[in-house]
Image 1 (cartoon, rainbow, N blue to C red):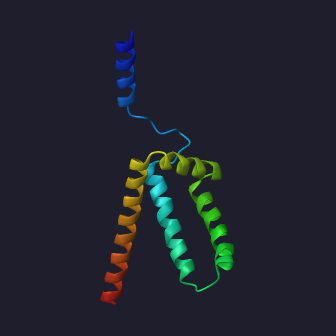
Image 2: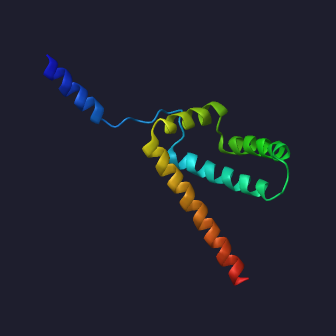
Image 3: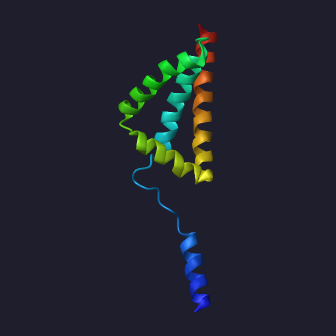
Length: 114
């Protein structure tokens, strides 16, 4: 009886957990995070107080979520899901970093050529 339990437990722990339907796919979350980081970067370049920046940023964030059709609850649940799956979250952040790096490289090239 104990051996059967261990075999079932081993098999079930090896099965890949599927992402819930109300959690953003890694690509979706990565894309949203890139846009949010770019907006934060623009805000930090305005040389305004944190309170003032939040007054601009929060409506932008709401508009961005509406543009992508993402509810607050979905975004919150997505963050919670990926925080509890750090290997997947790391891949998302790698994607965000790569995308931001490529954008920066394109901007530098564009500036250099002009």
